[in-house]
Amino acid sequence: MIQTQQPKLLDTVRHTARLKHLSHKTESSYVNYIRRFILYHHKRHPRDMGADEVRAFLTHMAVQEKVAASTQNVALSALLFLYRDVLQIALPDISDAVRARRPQHVPVVFTAAEAKAIIAHLGGTPRLVVSLLYGSGLRLAEAVRLRVKDIDFERQQITVRDGKGEKDRTTMLPSSVVEELGRHLVKVKLLHEEDCAKGYGEVYLPYALERKYPNVNKTWAWQYVFPSAVRSLDVEANKTRRFHVSPATIQKAVKQALDLAQVIKHGGCHTFRHSFATHLLEAHV
Image (cartoon, rainbow, N blue to C red):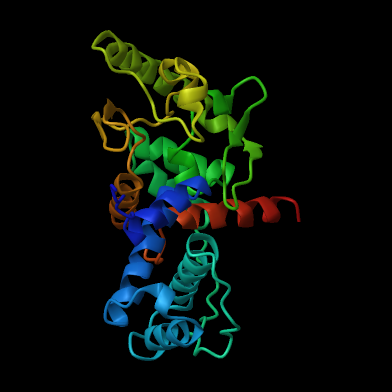
């Protein structure tokens, strides 16, 4: 009788995360904290542990590691996902675990002059992406994942797919970037046509759409608005593709622009989203 080998736990976690349509970032984060949880308890299998061990791990993070409240919350979410969705075990109440303190910070907001000065020290793709963070209120991850079909120039509207909480929404396309974004897309289309001519041009599609619509992954509408400068291997599909630009590339450019603009506030890409909301409210007061 042939015995089939059981998949490793972390592989099962990854598989379940993809069935639940969790983002790659969330999947990676959950796997990391589940691995740390297992190592903290000397490699015991989670099936042999329960609420006491979860409590001990979360308390250790708060007391010994002194992590931020947000970090501990992600670890808790990872462990709840492990037991509820992967192992299908209900955990008793763990509310008495020591929780990391959540500091009461006022969000950093750039003034209009500061935002314009920073953007002025950006160029190319980082400039366009940051202009959308500030002019449309997009999160960085939402901006880099935009597809060509998500931009409606006629209505001056952007559709955000699978935003926070897997929700779609629409937001404004600021008139100040319309012309520059149009020129940018002309270059992106040429790049896509070159990829197709060389036998590439396929883009990653979510939710098994690639199987449902086998030819749509090469269409112009599904290409990323902000593609990476290089093609790379999609390990899961074993195909060479052009993914979207890395968020780290934009973050690095913004950090340099902050220095060049001599803005001393401790801000970054997300600060432009806060600034968008604040300036929008101020304009209607």
